[in-house]
Amino acid sequence: MDQSLLDSLRVVALPTKTNFRGIKIREVALFKGEYGWAEFSPFLEYEDAECAPWLACAIEAATKPRPKLFRSTINVNGTIPAIDDEKEISKIVDLYPGVKTFKIKVGDNTELDLARIKAVRSLRPDSAIRVDVNGAWTVDQAVSFLKLAGEIEYIEQPCASVEELRELKKRIDVKIAGDEVIRKAVDPFALDLNGVVDILMLKVQPLGGIKRIHNLIDHHKLPVVVSSALESAIGIDYGLVLAGSINHLDYGCGLATGSLLAKDVANISIVSGQMEISSPTPIFDGLDVSIERFEWWKNRIMRTAELL
Image 1 (tube, rainbow, N blue to C red):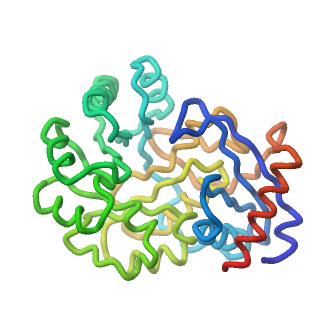
Image 2 (tube, rainbow, N blue to C red):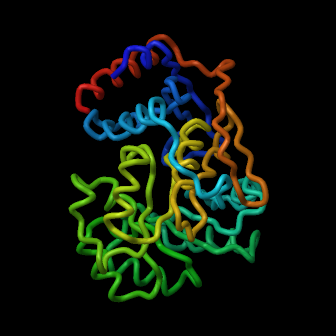
């Protein structure tokens, strides 16, 4: 890894507006190269080996030219965390002006999950609904839930394994999107996804950057949705670049999670359900972490770089 990238390193702590996957403060590392600012932000619990594709993506973003773009604005979905208070759900829905699709986190409690879906439908009755299970269900649980949930655009990672997803696909008519089954695979190119998923859920950092993801798309030849990992505006913008560089993009993308941050290094607005690629310059005012946290991230980057 080039020393100049490390010399530009900044680490920031971004508070969230709500509890999202147990996170109330999102720490991210940013550095700058010839082609702009880049983000490295694997979650704190990830081991170094799992961080390697995230760093490969950040280095690509900082040091490689942007790909050809087919669009400069991207349709996005709203993301609803696993929250149950109707007033809080209403506040989260309002963060996504003009979006036509909502992805709702489910999987822990069927009654509360269905109530969450019902609340979003009542607030945005014309919006399509997606649900994200993060691999938490058995095949039977997924089948039972879908019988109760009403019309669902697609269900994301309902079960953990390829074998379970293949069995589930035989039993339901709802489309299945694969996330962790691809992202956590030792070799996502080696997966046989025929009869397993209908849609590839692709996140630019965890999968190693834009070039590698284009190779994955060419390999699996399935429709795609570009999603995010609660990144800052710098990471989100690179996800928008990925979405803009995909020729056929039939679904709105999960790139509006910055709306869940109470503070960010830049602002990428949602206008009429769309976000624009903008190459933002970060503003660090008051967001830098302590010296101890900075050194933790710097050491993490240096260890991870040895694995590339």
